[in-house]
Length: 445
Ligand code: ATP
Ligand code: MG
Image 1 (cartoon, helix red, strand yellow):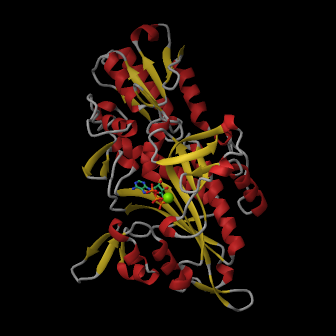
Image 2 (cartoon, rainbow, N blue to C red):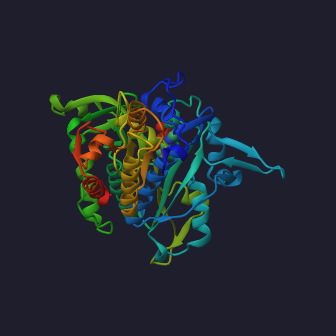
């Protein structure tokens, strides 16, 4: 992508409405525009990151054996009257009436709709286990939308629903979600800690929230700081192996980690003092097992292997896809701007031409752009007729993890410069070496 032809409306000034760094940087980097309180347009750069996050979420869900689909944003109120939540949900639910005077709502979540789909099409234990999920916009009329996309009213969520024959099978689905979420966040360069949580209006007593530690987080968290060092890494996971999956969950949930709602001061005391930490976190996901809470009232029943009709055991599992964009920035930035982890960066590399219009630098830049494209890597090429300082400032602000700089002096010696956004370390090398290096960095992602 040539910057001269792109749409990247960066702001020089700090927008006064932004209270936290991720919101400020998303506005300054031209990623989003607010259209109403808590409702945003995703401008091209922000949209690229959102799509990358969605892609990773899809890949890890499919790897865990979960099946993607898509349900609508608008839902009939009658479904929610069946579960009893139409009245319970309160002011957070946006209620709509169509021209036939039928009550609709903009979905805040999808337990009722997925249960309706299940009961219409599934009748036997032989069709289980089944986990369906989608990534769709939600609306919750939050009292205080704030912090940009972190607490929006309209926001993008991955929500998945498991249907199983009994509690044991449903807890295996719960564990699969925990492990697939850990891998999802790790691929985004995040450490998200599963913490025992309170269940709220969804119901059920088995629930964990995933929290990214950040001073600006809305949740109070209490934890043994050794949980921050746990990593899945590249280990292979057989999602059908109940014991192995449960083992991973145990590894990640044994050290003390709880949100304020479930905090147990007495138990916390047993953590060695040097490791006892109190802080704040951003909730980027939550998983629930809620037994037959929806299947019973809504008649999601299957025939079991003894010929009896039994309600299915269910759970629901959410990832805050649009919130993650802000959470990643909270966890990864400096005073000059965003620092994208390679896994989610909008472009893998930025290319800066220090002398636009010079035959040699123009040709070298075009060659690098082409060589990276041949490896499937799209470069953001700053081909504008601008000062070097302005080009570097833009690149630093938008946070691409790698920058290749091409200038006439270096080029005369056959060299370009490769710079890491994270460390600032710069290295001279031939254009071919720079291309090979970038190719190797992204090869495994
Ligand atoms: P919160 O406690 O932050 O209001 P929640 O527990 O009500 O969130 P869930 O129903 O668990 O939210 O939804 C799954 C995920 O969707 C959350 O973990 C969070 O990452 C994201 N999410 C929830 N509400 C919002 C919002 N208003 N804006 C952006 N993301 C949200
Ligand atoms: Mg939650």
